[in-house]
Image (tube, rainbow, N blue to C red):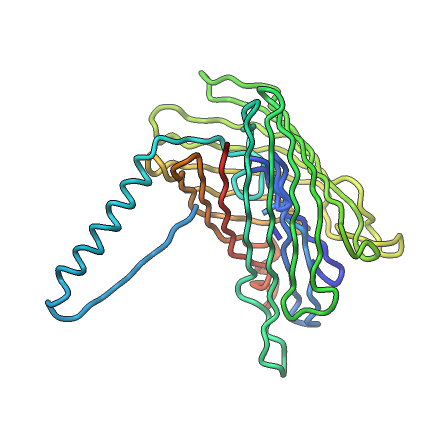
Length: 327
């Protein structure tokens, strides 16, 4: 979703607005990256499926009736979820924009929550430094094929050096310029912009543009959809000597890839990827569940593309959960 004393990672996502930073077609998220060698915290703004497991084991036979009632209740609740007659377009998967747009006259609200896991153990203190990201997003369909949105990601670095909280505003726009339902093809393009609301002496504005193509295989109700396209970063200083910097890493262009695989009428396995070991570069697999009342629940785990480069690389990884609703 999803930076560093300079805060820098931009989580861009376009799920129903997308971006962690998310754009209405992209959501930009803020993520944290830390280096074990110098213990510096690197903050990143990134444009960043819920599955819950319950295991209970009881001994003896006296709890059989109670256990049956509990399981029956869970079954009824699950049946209610999967038979709810709702469906919604997905403006983003986790971080990457899809080719979907919010329908004209409709609105979409989403709240993203990310937690760095595991956190960084601070040597000699017993404390753990951990990044949290809170990102409310709002998107409106302005034409049958265009949406505009705004995100307000807040990045909080618990137990980090001051300043430990940064806020951003992320306006975004997406336009679907081609759609062929019969062939399962669509093309879209958009922009996500990121401007800091505080601490502007250490972070400046930047954004990215993208275009993508999606192909839905319609042989059955469980046919997958693939999304792919290029992105490019705009603005932001590349050198600290030029002033405040929020997108330090290279490259400043790359690919976006997404995969959505229905496994049930109301549940799908989903995954997306921004290429590049930069402020956008994350791979996020997870589960997406359609809820009653035009709701959507996604849960996944974001791996920074640099997560395997050294012994501390797993610090650039975040648990990613969001809830969205169309109204």
